[in-house]
Image (tube, rainbow over the protein chains, first blue to last red):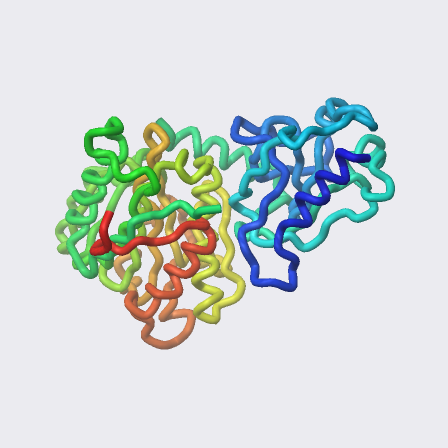
Amino acid sequence: RALVQALLCTLRAVPSPATRALPAEALAAGGGAVRTLRTRPALLSVSKFTEKREWITTESDTGTVGISNFAQEALPEVGTKLNKQDEFGALERVKAAREVTEINEVLAENPGLVNKSCYEDGWLIKMTLSIPFRTKDLMSEEAYEKYIKSIEE
Amino acid sequence: MRQPAVRLVRLGRVPYAELLGLQDRWLRRLQAEPGTEAPSGTEAGALLLCEPAGPVYTAGLRGGLTPEETARLRALGAEVRVTGRGGLATFHGPGQLLCHPVLDLRRLGLRLRMHVAALEACAVRLCELQGLQGARARSPPYTGVWLGDRKICAIGVRCGRHITSHGLALNCSTDLTWFEHIVPCGLVGTGVTSLSKELQRHVTVDEVMPPFLVAFKEIYKCTLISEDSPN
C-alpha cells in the first residue's frame, strides 16, 4: 500500500488537466528496447518506452499506462518500508505524453488491484499523447519496424 | 526539468545543395568526439529549414529513379540527386517547406521510430493549425502525411549512429505538376496535394513557418535556439 501511495503521490505531482498542458511524466523504467505486446489484442502497444515493465494502450490520442505482470510480480511486498532514496523505476519524461488526464484513484484504496489486474483495473494513469498512434493495425507496426531497420546504421 | 535545446537554422530560399552541405557539416559536428567540434552539452542538434530555390528530384536508399528517368527529368530543367534517406523518388522545389532535423536521438531520449512518428505529428499538427482537419500519417510503404488519398507531406529519414538527417517536405504552394513526371514515392495512382490546393488560397512557406516551429517545439519537447544567440 505504501508503495502504491508513493507512486500515486509522485504522479499527482504532475500538473492537473486544469493547468497549462506541460510535458507529462509517466512511470518508466528508462531506455532499453521495448517489445510490442502481441499476445493480448487489447494491449496493442505501439509506442516503445521501456523494457518489459510497463504497457501503454492507445486510442488515437489517449494513452493508458500500467505495469506488466512481470513488473507487478517484482513489486516489494506490502509493508516493505521505503527509504527516501528508493526509486520505483525512474520517472522519465515520456516524449509522446502531452498531459496526464487521470490517475487511478481506486488504487489508493485498493493497491492490490495492481497485482490482481495489472492489465485492466490496475492501470496507473491516463494521458493525452502529442504523437498520435494508430493501434488498429499490427501489420503497420511491422512495416514500420522494417522501415526503421532499412534506414538505420 | 530542463528541456533539451535544438539550434534553429533558417536558410530561407536556397538551392537544395546548400541544405545538403549544411546538413553534412552538422552531421560531422554531432558525430565528432566530445572535446573537439561537439556542440555544448545542452544542444541536441539542429533544425534545418529551407525552401528549395529550384526544382530537384531525389531518389532514396531504395533507389527510385532509373538512368532513363534521370535523363528525362534533367531535360525538364530539374536537378536529380541520390540521397541516403529512406524512401523512393520525390520532388523538392519552390513553395515547399523542407525540414531536416539533424538530431542526436540519445540527447532527446528518442528512439528512431518515435522520431519518425514525431515528424509525422509535426505535419499533421501544422495542417490542423492551418485549418485542415483530417490529415493523417500512414505507415510504410505509404510513409508520409495524407489528406484522403492525396499526400501533402513526404517523409524520408536517415539515421547513422543515433544521428538523424533528412526529414520532411511539406507542400505549401508547390507547383504540383512537377510530380506528374515521377511516380511519387513509388506509389502508382496516388495523388499529391498542397496547403494552397486544399485551402484554395496561396499559402507560402513563410506563412507556415511560425506555426510549424510551434508544433515542432511542442512535439519534440525542446526549445529552439536561434543561430545568432550565443552558444
